[in-house]
Length: 119
Image (cartoon, rainbow, N blue to C red; front, side):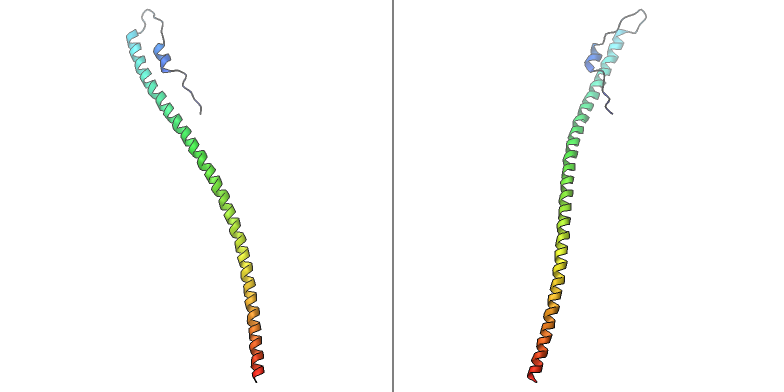
C-alpha cells in the first residue's frame, strides 16, 4: 500500500481561488484552510515518524532473520556432530562389551586351568 499525499502544506497555504459574485467569504475560506494546513502538517509529521519507525523495524527484522538463519545452520551442524558422536559411542560401547566378554572368558579359562593344575 504505497499511497502518497498529493498536496503539501505549502500548496494548501498558497492556493488562490477566483472570486465570483455571491461566492464564499474569503476570510472564512482562509481561516479554514489555515486549520487544514495545521492538520496536514501533523499528518506529515506522523507519516515521517512511521516511515522512520518502519525503516528501523525492517532493519531489525533483517538482522534477526540473519541471526535465525545462522542459528539454524549452527543447530544443524551440532545435530550432525551429535549423531556422529552417538554412532561412534555406540560402536565403542559394543566393542568394549565384546572385549570384556572375551577377557572374562579368558579369565574363566585361566582359572579353570589353574584349578586343574593344583589338583
